[in-house]
Image 1: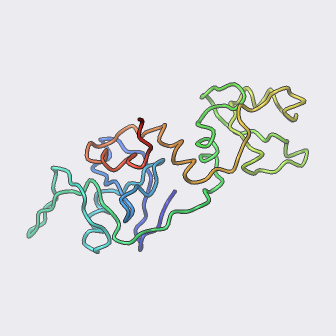
Image 2: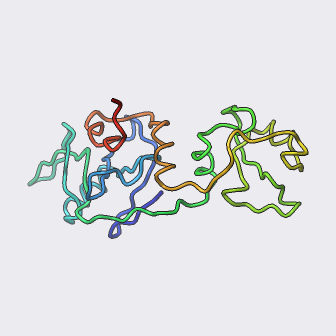
Image 3: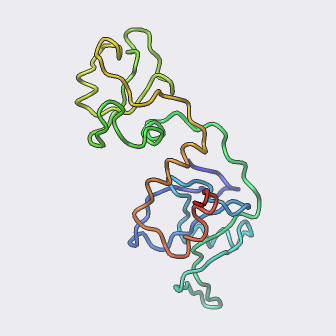
Amino acid sequence: MNVQVSNMQVSNAHVSPGNGFPALVLNADFRPLSYYPLSLWSWQDAIKAVFLERVNIVEQYDQAVHSPSLEMKLPSVVSLKTFVRPSTHPAFTRFNVFLRDRFCCQYCGSRDDLTFDHLIPRSRGGHTTWINVVAACSPCNLRKANMTPAEARMWPSQNPIQPSVQHLHRNGRLFPPNFLHQSWLDYLYWDTELEP
């Protein structure tokens, strides 16, 4: 998910400590614009947005940048000053199909060598839509071949649905990024239901 915010692109790249000092981008309601991939800006884009008065700094790193007349700590969490209405319908992409299906083959449960399979093969009039496509490992996809689930005696573990954005966010929380800065933790997952 990429969101355009007044000429600033919110990228959702995977982050590691070697990628510098990314800033977690929160909407004006203090929720991340996206959970998976996590909504992040480079430190350069975050500072630019601060100077253009598009964001508020919520948390900072200990590291700072310097100019001849200014020292500024790098933002680690920023919030947009203007609320961006989240999309209500997720894009139909391979990644989102895998996310809906929790990155596992719907026939055998494997997480290796994923592709996708048409329940009703395209050669038989099946369409490439949310309700006709499931994540499948290559061996299962090859075994099912050009057959329907009944002919192949292969049934998906769950019926494919068109997910909501909330459904994908919920699934995305199951796959946290490789790197989460400590300052981000208070702003992630705060809207999840608490256990009694």
